[in-house]
Each structure stands twice: as structure tokens, then as C-alpha cells.
Length: 339
Image 1 (spheres, one colour):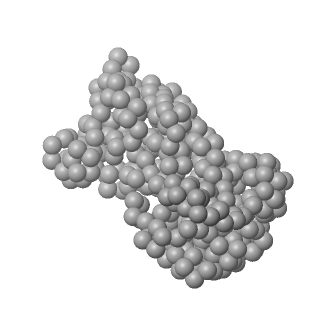
Image 2: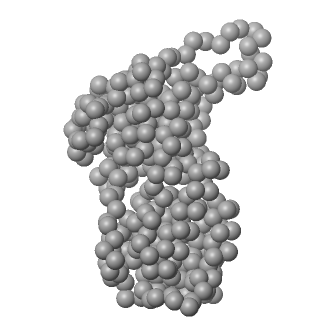
Image 3: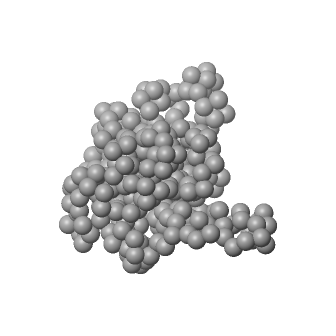
């Protein structure tokens, strides 16, 4: 379900693209939409003329009161603020949007294509970290790691042993979206002796896992359902009441995709009513807001959208953003082109 990159043809469509022979990259205006990794910010300041949108209350209108729109030739966004139609229209000389993420749901790709604006993201370098966290969330929910940690810290172990948890090894795992991250999760789950099945828009020829063309059938057949697909209009609320009920009162839902993949109201209801066994969540519909009902549930493990947030991966993502910008402004092929 990942957006497939459009191969570069070597012929740019954007009339604003200019050769920069003899022009220092330090003069090129780059807009960073919100605070990200400090190392990325430092690298952008070193190599380009960096502007920070949050210094203008994250408002394009405020930014344009003090800066000329034609100054900006590149935008660096992430999963919080990318490049929507308003932002794109505000900068007539915009040539490239470089996303500090693999997801593209915060970028108006259609508008970028219309205007010939290049788009690059950071695939592959974050795959392992996100897949690792998915397995961590499964273990956290089934083995009750957070609850047992608290049990020790507040001194309850002195009074009684902690209750029994649930085994992970050998469980049936269903994956929604068998792209880079979904495949990496599958390989890790296989190491635990789990059987793997998946739902995707089409069957993957490289995969030896059981394919389901219907997500309800996948949810019915597995004990752990992991959401790992890209967020599109097609996949928004793909995890709805029907899917949750198919997963059932012993089932576990793991979401390391995007918050809007899950109908959060239905998820909360199912957990409170016992129609779902548990959940491990790294993403939410209205981040950083988390439904208050989830905070008191012992069968839910919550993370603050940190799937790729390790020092190693964050540095690698930042380097890839910088490399894509340098490649573009040197009239070289992008390393990880989307369009």
C-alpha cells in the first residue's frame, strides 16, 4: 500500500528549476515547517539559508508578512506539518519538498505534480526501527511489561507475585500492508514462530505468506493484527468496528502506521466493552491528543509516535534529506524520489 516512487526521467517539468552553477547552496532558501531532529536543523543551517516556520507561529500568512514568498525554493516537512495546497501555492519558486519521514499523507502530491515540484522522502532507513517497535508493542501488551514494571516500582511485588501474562511465540499474526515495514515485521514475527498472513491491494509475488483480499477475513484468522500500510483515502479508518469485532475479545491490535488508520472511537468502545483483547499504539488520530479512556487501561501500551526515533535512524533520515536537497540543487537524480 506504499506510494510507488515515480522514476526520474532527467527532464524537469518545473519552469522555476535553474542550474545553480556558480551559485552557493548557502543562498538557497529552505523552509522547515516545524521542529524536527536538532541534527537536521543544524545541517540545514550549515548548507542552506534556513527559515523556520514555527518562528512565525507556524502560519504561512505570518511568515509572508516578514519574508518574500519567492525566497523559498525547498520545503522540509514531516508527519506533523508537510506541504499542503496552501503552502505550495504560497511559494512560487518552490522546486522540491523533502519529507523527514516515509509517509506522504501530509503532502499534497497532486498539487506537487501539477506544478512540477519534486518530492522526496526517507524510506528504508527507518524500516528496522519501526518494525522493532511493532514487536516491542506486541510483547508489551501480551507480556504486560509496562504493568509489571509499575508493579515492581510501587512495591506490590513484596506482597504478592504478579499475575500471569500471555505468550507471544507461536501466535498468528496478520499484517495490513506488506510493504517495506510490513515485510520487516513479518520477518521478526517469524523468528517467534508465528504464522504470518496479510492484506494488501494485491498479492505480493515475493511473499510466501497467506494473502487475504478481504481485511475482515484477515482479522478473523489472526490473533494479532498489525497496521503497517500507508495512509490514503482508501485506508483511512480501515480498522473500523467490523474489523475490530472480527479480531475479537482475545485479539490484539497494533498500530505503527498512522492514527487515522483506526476509527479511534470504535477502538475505545471495543476495549472498554471487552470486545477487543488489547492494543499497542504508537500513533493516534489527533496527535498529540490521546483519548483519556485509554490512559487507564492495563491492556493497552501507548507510545508517543516514536517508531523511528532512535539517534541512529534520526541521523540517517536527516542525512538523506540533506542528500536529496543537494542532489536536486546540483541537477543530479534524487536518491529517494517520490515524484
